[in-house]
Length: 285
Ligand code: BTN
Image (cartoon, rainbow, N blue to C red; front, side, top):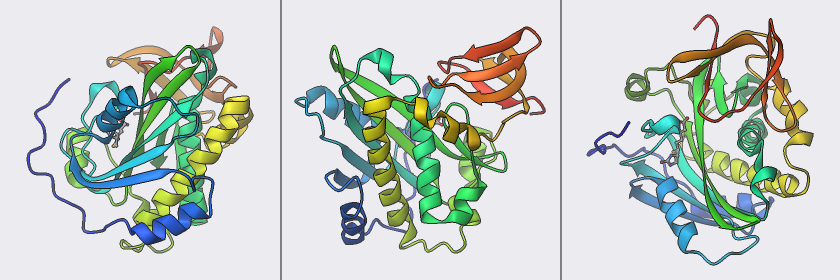
């Protein structure tokens, strides 16, 4: 579905503190990452996929692009993403891996995000659950969406562009646009400082993503699967898998395997579900 660009998005009233960000990244795994913050763009994912197409290959050149406003932000399944009540940014990450070794990457990203929120505030981390393949939610309400796009750069080289929209506060306009109840990190944090916390959260996510990348390059998703399943919001619950609104499979969610497939207990036995175009819903939804 394509939509007319949002002509008048409002800017948030907080700003990334560049000095503080530099300090927080310097102490972590993302210390060498380049970060650019812009007032407005169409889509940070579109910007970075375009930049990756033109960039010479480099094994380690990770970069982040943050925008306070996106006029054509994109979500999964071709949906638009308006995220003015949150952090909207993308990370370009080179991975010297064959396509076969990328399985589970999107789950690894969701897990890194959940763990970063726990680093920022354990009370927040405790409330965040993962919804396969990579949504974050609080009490069944969507907290964050992740859109991963890839730019092949050779037989064993791919740039992945990881787009993240993380709600800071609950935004009724976005709830209406998405037709979903949303959550924001502020409601689950012990205290939320709108001037300082967006920067802390961005740095924590970058540092966790950098650690995830190092681990993923060596061993892939498999060693992370147990940590993912421990945060699975639907573990042992009845779920449906939908494609274009049509139910494809139903059963009990049994976590994920080492390749990031959802394990679904059905009357016919245990099925492995690949992410692709299917969406998961609780059976009662
Ligand atoms: C989803 O539909 O759940 C994924 C939403 C991803 C939105 C983010 S916001 C930053 C980045 N730029 C985009 O255009 N999309 C992603």
